[in-house]
Structures are given as structure tokens and as C-alpha cells.
Image 1 (cartoon, each protein chain N blue to C red):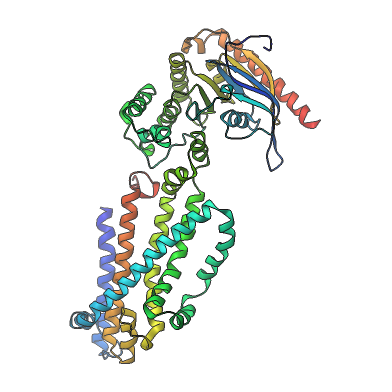
Image 2: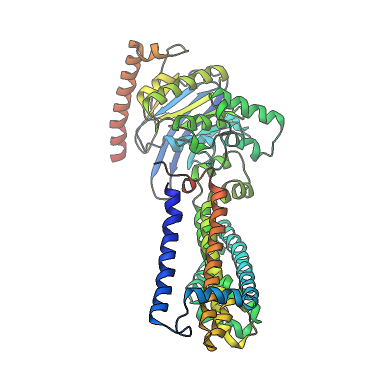
Amino acid sequence: MAAQSHPATAVSLRGIGKTFANGVTALSGFSLDVRDGEFVSLLGPSGCGKSTALRIIAGLTAPGAGQADVLAGHRTAGEIGFVFQEPTLMPWATAADNVRLPFRLRGDAGAEAQRKVARALEQVGLARFALAYPRELSGGMKMRASIARALVTEPRLLLMDEPFAALDEITRFKLNNDLLALWQMLRRTVVFVTHSVFESVYLSQRVVVMTPRPGRAFRELVIDAPYPRDERFRTSADYAGYCRRVSEALAEAMAAGGAGEAA
Amino acid sequence: MSWVFRVLLPAAVLAAIVLGWHAVVAINGIPPFVLPGPGLVAATLVSDWGVLGPSLLTTLLTTFEGFALAAVGGIALAVLFNQSRLVEYSLYPYAVILQVTPVVAIAPLLLIYLPQHAAVLACAWIVAFFPVLANTTLGLNSADRNLVALFELYDASGWQILWTLKIPSALPQILTGLRIAGGLALIGAVVAEIAAGSAGAGSGLAYRIAESGYRLNIPRMFAALLLLSVAGIVIFAMLSLLSHLLLRRWHESALAREA
């Protein structure tokens, strides 16, 4: 992949290391390149530092070692959208007010902001629930609101930290499909963290398999299936083949990571 | 249905107690200076209203002032603690000391150093402010970590994080603190009035109770006590209503339970 020449790089991590105050080393020598408009999944077992990597990309956590270059260093507020594993909505505010939050924090109450909020809600299928409070929404709808909030500023980079892990399978499949449709329409760069082989293969152009803690990129697999992907892809032999290869890579990563930890 | 029970059952208990009280007094022929019957207490409440009414007002005013100071002081101090660890470490132990030292023991001292009204107010404040401080501190520290991270991602200022995130998410705890403080402010005011006793020119309800005790005017003692109870209940009910109104749209505690 080093030989590829990219039109523009959204994220470039070089030799990132991160050790927390409690002595846990989450990442060590982690490198990652994400092109503009690409959909990349970080796949690894729980506690492999995937979330830490995402927080470093977002600028929420400073790397202990290495270099993180995100959006060529010209990041301003609203250029990165972040979706957490939990919907992370403010329970005292309506869905629309939650989605409006990024504008509110920059003091923008203009008509244009209102229009963007309405459009973001519409894009995730929540237009009718703009005035509902989070507790009145189902788990999937809360996550939709969370995604709308991340998209409302039209970010160049969307970071998603196992956003659908807590949802039931039916809802997850539906949200997977809707997310892909949105991605094809908006063409934002997406870095998607997951511990599901099937989800990573279904969604992404490229899967980066990580080792257990301390996490580093073990192997990258290109999922060379055309979009739009739908239920036909989900049940195809191609899909099964990709899943098998990614699973094998994950198993090797687990073995390699264990050896690394012992060393 | 459950509504009816929630109103009817306590009312039935009250009626039973009042009836029993009346029966005990009437059957045994207990004299009023030992135990007045409920009827006499009610009659005293009406006949002595000229004395008791202004006293009630005095006590309520002190309570309200103490409560307001405790609410403002407790919330402000909690916000300060939340913003600065240094301030929290420096001052928190003293807030605890103020709380654990019985106010009955502090009241006589305060009465020496302060004018009486200020001393009574100080007592009401001392007992009422700690629950506001403790609950607000808990609430401010419990703000969702991911939401804080999200605010930082959008370059929110510390002020925005406080106003838009921490205070709203602490609201349930703040209101709990206020509900406790309302009752405690009344207790603090009463304790200080009792401590001031005949020494002060006080005219609060507690002072009336002490005064009636010296004069063996037992029916008036009961009437004053009744007023204090009712005042406490009304304060609690009003603060509960405020809490319900502020939280009903979003907080779990305010939701109707599904059958």
C-alpha cells in the first residue's frame, strides 16, 4: 500500500503509541492511511486499542508516540463527526436540539443551520421525530439521531466507534444498509471501528485487522466488491469468501498479538 | 385507581389518628394542660391566629431566606469545586465539618456573635446548604464522559460545557438537594429560634412553642407545632412539584410507571 499514490489523504497515522496513566499500553507502532472518501474498518478484539486509535484521529486523545496527521492538519470544529457506541444524546433535549448541538456550540442559530438540522434528520429517517425526546425513541432511532448529529456539520471525516454493537441484528442490518446509502450519497471519509467480521466486510472498501493489545495494524484486506451492496451481496459466495479471509487474518492477528505480548 | 388509594389511604389514617386522639382525651377526661383534644387545638389555632399567623410568617421568611442562600451558595460552591480541584480539596473538609457539627450546638454561639435574625438565618443556611452542595457536586461529576468528549470535539468552551452540558445533566441531583434543603432550612430556623428562646425578641413559631411551654399553654403549643408540620409539608410539596415540572419530559424518575 506504500506504493499507492493517493489523490488526497484524510488520515495518516505513523507509528502511533499510547500508554495510559494506569500502565496499559493500548497502541504500539500503529500506522494507518485513509484516502479521501474511503470507507475503512478497523477490526479487532475488544480492548485492542481501536477506540483509542479513533480518539487519537479525532484529536480527543494525544498520542504518546508517533505522528498523527488528520485532514492535513487544517482541522476546524465540525470537520470531524464522531459516533459513539452509545447514542450519547442529551436526554433533556429533543432529537432536533441534539442534532443542532454542533451549531449551538458555535453560536449559529441561523436559518441555514435550521435547514441543515432538518435535512440531517431527514437523511437518517427521523424527520417525523424531530420533537421527540431520546427516551421516546427506540435504540435504533437514537443511534440514527446520533448519526444525524455527526453528519449535520457536513464533516469531511466521519469516525464511528462500534455504533451498532448494542443493537439487535435486524436493526443493525437496516442501519448498515442506510449508512452505506448515505455514504454513497455524501461520499464522506468513514473510519468505522467494529469487532464484527461480517459488519466490516459488508460495509468497507478496506478492512484493517488489528492485533490484541498493544494494538497495531496486522493486515489489510481490500474488499473489492462493487457498491451499492445489498442483501444479495450479504448472501453471496463472494461475501462469504471475504468473511473467511478476514476471519483467518483475525485469528492470525490474535496469535501474533499474544506472542508480542509475551515478548 | 391507584390515585384514589394514594389520596384516600393516608386520609383514612389521619382520620383514624384524630378520632383515636379525641376518644382517648374524651374517655379519660384528660385535662387540656396535659393533652388537649384535636378540637381544642383547632379552636386555639383559630382564636390565637393573631399571634400564630405573624409568627408563622416570620419563621417562613427565615426559612425561605436560609433556603435561598443555601441553594445559591451550595450550587455556586459545587460549580467552583467542579471547575477547580484545588478549591475542592481546600474547602470540602470544612463543608463537611459544618455539616456534621450539630446545629443545636452551634446556635448559641452564633446568637452571641450575630444579631438574632442573622444568627437564625445562619443556622438555617448551615444545615440546608450541604445537601445542595453534595448533590450538585455528584451531579456535575456524573456528566456523560462521551458527551464531554463530543463537546470538546466541537471546540466548546469550558463555560459552554458547564452551562449546556453539566448543569442540565446535574439537574435531577440539584433538585434532590433542594428538596432536602427545603425541609432542613425549616429545621435550622426552628432550632435557632428555640436556642434563642426567651433571650431574643424573636417571634417565630418555635419561639411561640417555647413561650407557650413556659406558660403551660399546651393547646397553643400543639397549634404552633401543627403549623410547623404543615409548613414543612407545603415546602416539600412545592419543591417536589418544581422537580416534577422540570424533569417530566426527560428524566426516568419523573416518568409514569407502566403497569
